[in-house]
Image 1 (cartoon, rainbow, N blue to C red):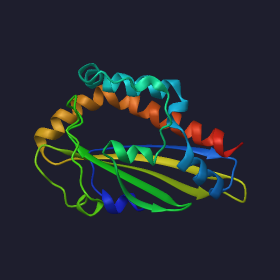
Image 2 (cartoon, rainbow, N blue to C red):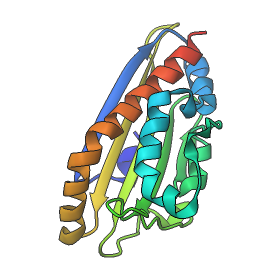
Image 3 (cartoon, one colour):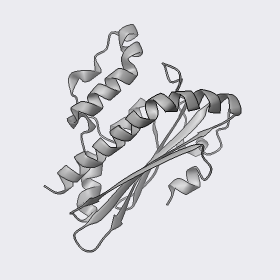
Image 4 (cartoon, rainbow, N blue to C red):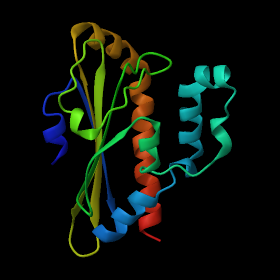
Length: 183
């Protein structure tokens, strides 16, 4: 998988997968077009994660607007790789344990070499594997690498709280894609 090229070494990795009764093309189309905000649970979790920022900026993220995997790029994630029907990889750099996230925006070609002290890098992929003519295994993996020991300690505390909810979000996204692909 291409995710290995972007982050072969990591401090945390979580992987989820789901069998979908649809072709790879149908699943990939559903992946690209899935509205993550279709899940009330995801909307609530995103709202809670962004609560301090919302109170400072007076924004409301619970509006239910459409939010796709492609749209996530506008929030600081970088599209690192995409091969139709095979794998999609996005990444983000920041201090995720801070309320603001301190997201660092950069061109994709700088992602691999970024190693500034005190930060964490995350990659998130979706990979598809055909399972016969009418089934596809869709998996998603998130990997995080901290650039130094100080960041690693801060991230470990953050992940104890956020990690389980991150897993819920990933599982919900897979369910949305499955539902849309099997229509």
